[in-house]
Structure formats: C-alpha cells, structure tokens
Image 1 (cartoon, rainbow, N blue to C red):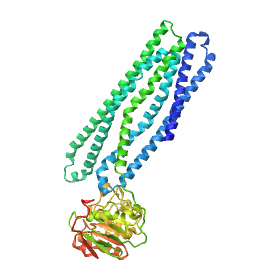
Image 2 (image 1 turned 60 degrees about the vertical axis):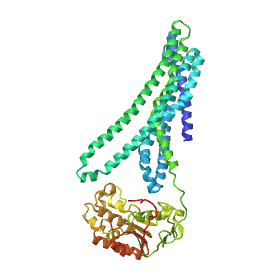
Image 3 (image 1 turned 45 degrees about the horizontal axis):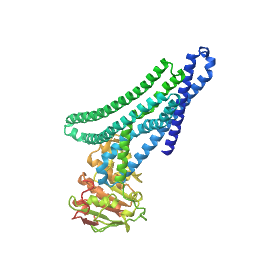
Length: 524
C-alpha cells in the first residue's frame, strides 16, 4: 500500500503540473491569436502548440498510469483482506463461526468490492485535490488576486458540505451493509429450504417471500442512490457557482479594459481546475464510504474473533492413543471405543474436542500423552478421518467428493467396505455423476455411504465416526460395522458414537456419557 500511495502521489504531481502548464499555454495561444493577427499562421504557433500537445499527452499518460496502479493496489488489498477474513473464519470453533457466518460472508462476497472504488477513484481524486487545488489557487493568485479571493471564498463551501453529507452517508452505509447482511442470510435460508418446500408441494408459497426480500433490497438501494445523487447535485452546484463568479468578475474587468486578455483567459481556464478535484472527491465519496464501512466490519471481525493461539507439536508414530479425564476415555490402537449416552450428553462435542475444534473445560484430552491444544491442527487433522453426523458433500462429481480430503489408496475397496459400490452401479455416470450442494442427487442413506467410503478408505490411523450407521438398513449396517472392526484390527484407533445395539456390540470398550461434558452440541 505504501508503494501504491507513493506512486499515486507522484502521478498526482505530474497531473497537476501538466494541468496548470497546459492552461497557461492554451491561454497564451488564444490571446496571441486574438490580439496579434500576424501570428495566426501555423508556423508562428508551432512551438506553443507542440508544448500544449506534449502537456496533454503527459497528463493523459499520468492519469492512465495512476488508474492502473490504483486497480492493482485495490486488487492486492481486497485479496489480502479477504484472505485475512477467511483465515479468521476457518480457524474459529464451529459454534463461534456459526454466530458470525453471515457477517463474514457478506463482507467477503459483497462488502469488500466497494473498496475498489475507494482505491481507483476516491484516493486518486483525494491526492489530486490535495496537490492540484492549492497549487492552482496559488497560480491564479499570481496572475489575478481578485479571482483568487473569489476562489478562496467559494472553495471552503465544498469541503463543508462534503463533511455534512459524509456524516449522513456514513450512517447510511452502515445501515445498508446491515440490511444486505440480513437480506442475504434470509435469502440463502430460503433457497436452502426450497428442496424441502418442493417435496411438500409448498414451493409456490415462497414466491411472495422472495418478492418481499427483493422489494426490501430495492428500497435499500434506492435510499442509498438518493443520497448519492443529492450529494453530487450539491457539489456540482457549488463548483459551478464558484467558476461562474470568477467568470463574471473576469468578464466585467475585460469589458472595461482593466486586465489583459491572457491573464483573464488564464484565470478562467484555471478556475475549473481548482474545483474539479473536489468535485471528483465528492462524487466518489459515497461509493468509497461503502468500501470503508466494509473494511471496518472486516477488521472488527478479525480483531473481535481472533482465534486462540495454535500449538506446534506433532503426533509421532503410526499408533495413536486418545485419552480424556472426563469421561474416562482411553482409546487405543487395535480396538473400537464406542461413546454412548442420551441425546445432549456431549458425544459429538467430545469428538469435536478430540479434533481440537472445540475447547472443553470439563475434559482434558491428550493424544499420545500430548494435550490436544498443544498440537499443530493441520498435522493432527491429517492423521484423522472424521465422519460427521451429516457428511460434508460439495457440488461436483462423486469422485471429487470421495477424494475431498485426499486421494484414497484403494478407492474400489473403500466403496465396497461402505456398500457404496451398489450405489455407484445405479448412478448414470458412475464416479463422474455430478452432485449438487449438500449431496443433492443422492438419498440420505447414499450420502451416508459416500461419507463412510471416504473414511474407511483413508489411511489415517485415527477414525472418528459419529452415528456411522444412521439412515442405513440392517444388512448394510452389518456390513459397515464389519468393515469398521476390520479397520480396528488393522491397528487403527477407532472411536464410534452410537446407541443402537449392533453398534454397541462391536465396541471393545463402551463409554457411557451420562453427564453433559461440554454444553450444547456442536452438530445437532
């Protein structure tokens, strides 16, 4: 950013110099043509015209370079802020992320885009106003002090009105971002529920809700545009009046012969250049304010939701032991440990604690004797295969979802172990069958088998399975449980959450969580 600001300032200096030079040169050319008929032939004006053309080319090139630098700087800053927000979001515990997911999503997908206007339009105009406006006013004073006095009286009105408009715009931008967050979250919830509404024959009932959300978004956008148009109107009116006052003063003095034509033309040509940068600042201020509001929200999210420091230790060896004080958990390689208990007892929460996703005050979890909080998360997660209650499925092919967390050593064997080979045989394109968001295209049982195939085919030494046989019929359940036993017999540390008798029967150790160990469940 510092390099961009320095380069943009240098371009602003060049633009200011070229603008003033071209105005003075053009005034001299016009005055010479009007007052000296003998100099009207092209040969006598060749040098001044060449200088004027060169100044115009320099100004155009400097403006092009400034715009290019602004685009690159804006892209770099937006990418960096987006990366910081996403890193913060993905490192938060699930409960904490759920509370701020919509805010982070709006900032990343829509809010930070407004920052581009801030860098490409507002900042260059601000730099130009800081350089060109005072220098041009000083040059006008050197040629005609009376015009400089008029400019000095009219010029402060523009910043004054900009401040007043900015106060209203700031509140409006914050309100618009909040409204956008609410509208987007409601719309996403509605879209996510459309398959269910369609299955129940109630999809047409959502049309009115969508129209209501669209109308609310339209009202918010129109309110923002009203402020933008009114602010532009006020600033243009003030700038036009300022230039008009200079023009009237110069014209009256020209009529009575009180000033030379070249000085009068110089003052007239430079007067708009005094107000022009401020008009650009005012016109871009509202759009830039949206970006600044989004940046403030991004930094507030990053600072307020800063994740806890992560450990750096790694789990050594291929055999992994998982232990916890409460409950008395001692999961070892080569055996299946089953966690059971009533709903809400904390079975899923304990699995999240073992993964290091949720800090548990009541349970001290150790991996090979090392506190899970001291482990480096990335290296620890690479040693674990986790099946959540709802397997994570993304839009893409079946093969993409099977290898979502890495390639499987034996893809066909993994599908057979999870009984997913029967599902593949019935899909139109087999592994290349395209699935929708959340696994749309497969039934709940088929999604469960896909998730099981992904876990059972993994070479990870630790398997965490949360209700692995949910949505499965009895024969498929028996085959899957045999595959789980086979993985444990191969030396894996297997922890299963379940309450059905067939699941309890495969456990070498059954841990009954009769008390709540971590508050509300992470994944209901």
